[in-house]
Image 1 (cartoon, rainbow, N blue to C red):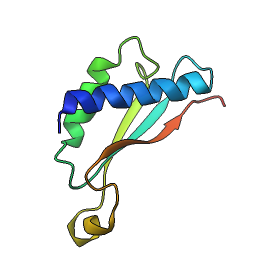
Image 2: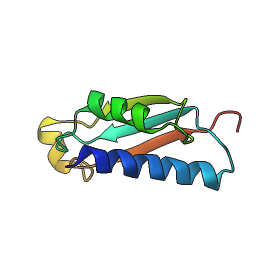
Image 3: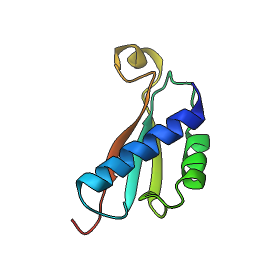
Length: 92
């Protein structure tokens, strides 16, 4: 999985959410990294912070959570993916 593409996609999705709600910035963003995704949670958070300049994510608190691993991962339809789990717009 190309982490740069994942980062671009996450920033694009978060920007779309901000536009839908007509806000210029997001305050908190939670990203879920599936246990089978081969993406390092710390790396993805760092890359998002670096790439988010000029976007609604620029000053947002970024939290990255890891999906459940082990046998439970087999039952998780999102175990191989990385996705925007939640967004806080703040003041709304």
